[in-house]
Image (cartoon, rainbow, N blue to C red; front, side, top):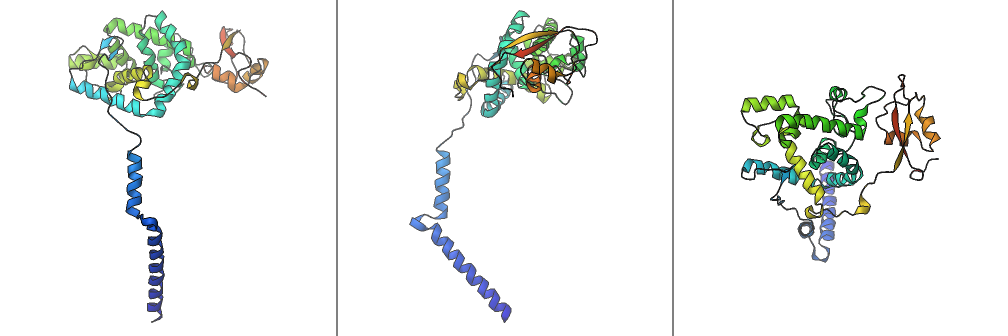
Length: 314
């Protein structure tokens, strides 16, 4: 009997609480369903997501895209959608491009490399000094062996794959070499990503002679389309819904160069001589990989030091 009374008491309390909740929900005649509908309506009347219109003149390095191929156009459409609606990433790329393209562009031009290849660096690294799972390093994602083959110093003390000007020159030398073989900038870009050995193998097996006819793995199969989408979006941000002003962009800090031909025992002490700290020195010279410089051979290195007044160092 006591158990029955306890159960009835609990049910009574539950009924009272339920009645109060229902009364609160229906205050002023607004029920739970109506509240939910109002929220949904408010959300749907705001931000709109739409399909992307692909430019008629889409090309890579003046090599046109075969618009008549529906499979190709689906791949193009995918990259435009992904890169347009990944807004935070696109904004970061725009900001970084303003800082780093002025360094990359003249080196490409000097070597006869089409300007579109600056977007290859964006696709490779998002203009950051990343290291891939395979060990490719820097803005241009250069492998250790390739860097050494093309004249970069690569060791634990100095790694010039992190040196933007020198690594850009290596990328130009590499691209020019393979363009002479393929006669196509599109295939050359694919070879930069997959390696010329893989591209040569696929060309021979599939008996075709251009990128758009090749069946490739997902990464290289998307590669050139991704570069073209990035190029179009960064070149015409307003067209794709980005509201970004010049004041929002990143700017390079002016620097001057200091030549060094001797070992440096402490970069922290070296930095203090120029009224900066260790972190700032390394940010401007990421190719210096350790807290010191060995340089037993007396090689000449050029270190960039930021102009006074841009950093406040205690």
